[in-house]
Length: 90
Image 1: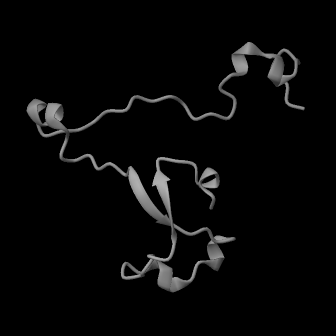
Image 2 (image 1 turned 180 degrees about the horizontal axis):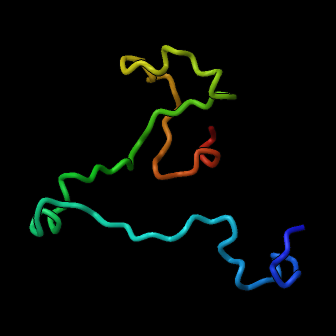
Image 3 (image 1 turned 135 degrees about the horizontal axis):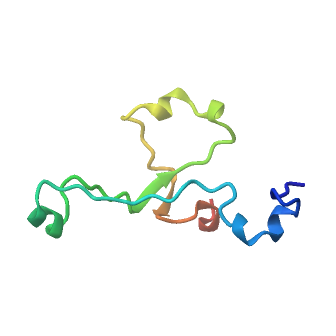
């Protein structure tokens, strides 16, 4: 069992709330000028939307042809992004 420096279980320590978490950081958005920033930066691309998704059992199981830009994924399931694919009947 992991313990704090005081020897108590880690889950009993109020100061251990960030155990295993990456450090917090500030998110900055870039734009060529203030007006462009206010209008929506041309350098920002939203990934939200509907994505074609197929789950493979392991990375080694993905066929090489799937990696080609010309691959037809029309038969794959469509999921909402952002979203949680296990909750979308995948």
